[in-house]
Image 1 (cartoon, rainbow, N blue to C red):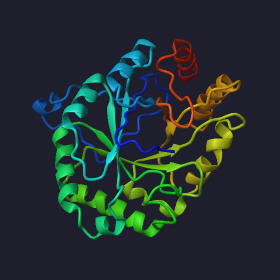
Image 2: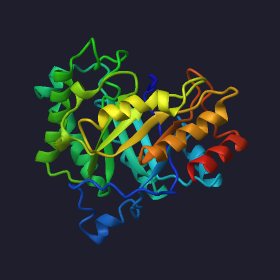
Image 3: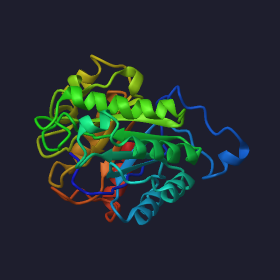
Length: 296
């Protein structure tokens, strides 16, 4: 599950094997000048992400040195905070696709739906459009859990879906066509009632962590199966890591074997220590093992 940190980042590898899932709405930079704003876009089909916290530049270098060149960045921020265009451009120049997740920590979903925050949404949409590069956006992840104010029991699926659709529709009205909409859920609980609808979503992300006795099939199997009963949208593991212990290597193997078996298009590793020692960027042996399993 996501931890209460205002800003986190994730980066990934460029070793891919599945078809590239480009959202139908995206048409790319319109002119040569726009295309050069932040650098060339790198089209990929599979991601290995890492959440490196505030040391994102250092960790990008470490993963790159380990043979895992970045291709995806996930930036968790708060609803109402302006887009950091400078950092987005830096990440794009590294070859990354930014995925920004904005969380409404204090804003009520009904107020978002009724337009109270439309000025910010409109401004944010224009900032995203101004990048002239593809960017992924996700609103209020893990809504099917119980720990965040936008999830049950503090909110309802109907309120969540309405808020998601409203934000999406503001972008659509402004003709912002360089967005991938990523709907990110937790592995814990049923998610169908929180589904915004196929026309509002491009990707589905699932969060969960592997621990002793909890391999990929136990953590993710049920939720992936459920998602595929109501959508054919491409799925990736949006936040994960493996707890240290005697089963660490077995679970790392399980993670990437499960990704391939279930035809997912990527994994994002949470590389900050929180509920356990998830971090691996400062351990060359663990980085090497992850690279071996991720690139099979």
